[in-house]
Length: 510
Image (cartoon, rainbow, N blue to C red; front, side):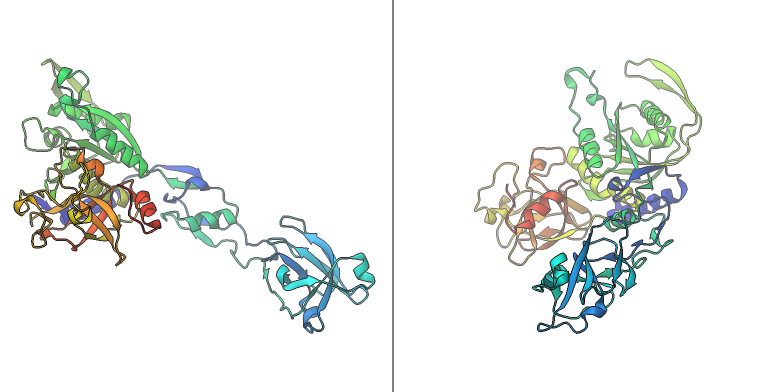
């Protein structure tokens, strides 16, 4: 019996959470500019208090606030500029005493240290450059120094960053296990930390399944669409991916290749295969897992379309195994495999049809990887389904979104065309259905509007070329009509396209 989609997700997340607790994650040291979205291995404390000294928060003039208390438009306070201090300059000793009736000041830049008063009044504030004017005084001091005047009182500490008022030595900046966010990068850099220890990215091995994919399959060879798609997509999502080749349709050979991959890459967190999980004579993946690898199949077949043959299993720590392998030429050989893995490995058997494989990658495998990487779930985008027959005035190009067609389950539109009284699509109510869709625009109501790809055969790639999202029709919902609300998920790798498309509020290009 097919397992409900929501139950499958619960099993996947629980297994990923358990893997976090039991599998030893490798670590690496990376520079801060490479640390974003990584998981910190260690807790990082501030090694110092910041700012280390009193510094200016503004470009302006460091001066004595006491000398400004009677300042006004009629009686401005006049100061002689006796120094210029830039950020990074050494502390400058200066006298704060009156000089022929004029107080001293220092031109100071943002981040610069305040001058140290050796005598007289302290330099306890910064008056912004725009709050001063050149002084018209022509006294003795003005003939020697450039002078400025301010027309209102300043307060002690104005525009002055006190030493240690940001971070104190020993403050926690980043906890072990935290996902590193941009504010973490800024804070770490501000206290002089340049590198962090992080958990290595989850590593995924990818197999394609089927003798027909092998180069020596003569004229019957079929190009492998799934392997490149899965590898490219997972790499774009930030995971370490290794393509492991093609598995033949022989149970023992499939098990041997899987175990060999674990021996050669013992740090794999997940293996993905495509094909070989249905009920046909040559669908050997489950047999290979259970009979030869002692794997625990956690579910096989999900109430979702496309992708219902999907399989999820756990390969335990490796044990010595031996069996007879019959190769494709009918010859037999015996292979003994030593213990190959000191950790359990998640296994996803995805369907061989390309669109079904893409759906299962996004809605089954990715939730496991996100949980393993302490990343949040992909949030749905609330959207409204629209009829493109009406939207495009009947001009529907090949591969574009259409309101015509049949949803998984075989229920067709009445007369094969949309009317106001007929649904755009009908779907089986006992499954979660994921339909490739096309972003249309953001409507006057502010909601995203999407259309649904008409030809959604899981084995046809050309219609999928026109898609940039998935429309999720939840179990129990049998039809969608023009204007209905749905949850939409951008295709993996398409989030940037959506952001650009909506930045100006215009309809994206077809």
